[in-house]
Length: 415
Image (tube, rainbow, N blue to C red; front, top):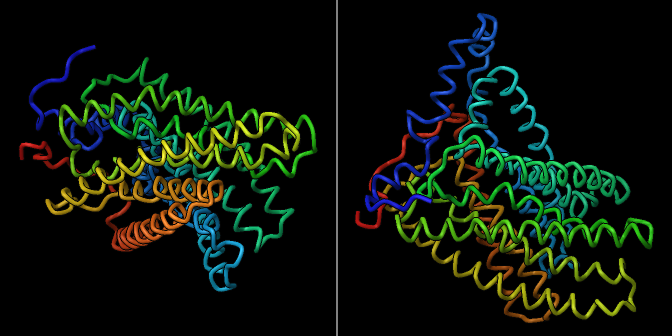
């Protein structure tokens, strides 16, 4: 493996090839455009905005759905006032609407800008965002069961969640295999290109592991419930091992080359995703185990202990990383970090930490963990409000969708 170079500023600017004017995606797109038929070029001119609706737009769906799910996971959930419950139902409904609109826009992107869509798959900085699609399906499905059932009724909510969970899990496994395969076979990446975005394809199975246990009580008792429980544990292990493989590369790149370009600084929050989601997963799996394995199973105490011990360690590291990420973002904002769709990275990862802290709080009964869950939910709500407001403003003003800006230099620690 080649060694990291000493020129930190230059290498930091190269960590986001899709942000540069001469990116891999831009070159491939220009070549493909020259081969388009006149009809295809006319279609592209009719729908120019769809050209920049990339797979990263699914992050807005995830970030909205997690607000409803995280709110319902807090200790106050059983005693929620009707007004508060209606607010979470409204947020869930908004995420469900977005799950209809964003895939429709993405379908238009593939139909009218196929050259750009294919170029995205060949761009190592864009392709990992395909991991957002299965997580959007799973997040909305989980929110439908926990929050949407107050509007749809339990039978309909279970049916919707079952469909979205199945589709999201299958898509997540396909992405977890397909995107790393592309990175190995087709992409040309260097150690300096390592980014938290690389985690997105491999986190999707962890989301399935965290949300699958909610469906266990609705399956026939016996083998069906046991199969789903063990399958979720397998998805947990798959995602965790893949994360542990990639995370050292990301940390090494940050320590050696310094912070990423301003436009990519929010992606530091993506590291919280597998940490918070894995904490949530082991907690939910331990809660669902008695109904799947039987109340007399000798494995139950071990699963409960593992959930607490693992969860405390993962959540502790998540809080450490959160402090570093917040400090880095504050530094970037003070130096002029512009708004971009990467700001949605502030939402879903923090939401997984809310659900993880809430699960640990229920398992241990510690008031401190309950308070932590509320504090993280306040941070999540503020981040979602800002990202949503800026996105809507960008859509209304015409600034979005738009191609990503060129990276601003001077992000190395020596500047």
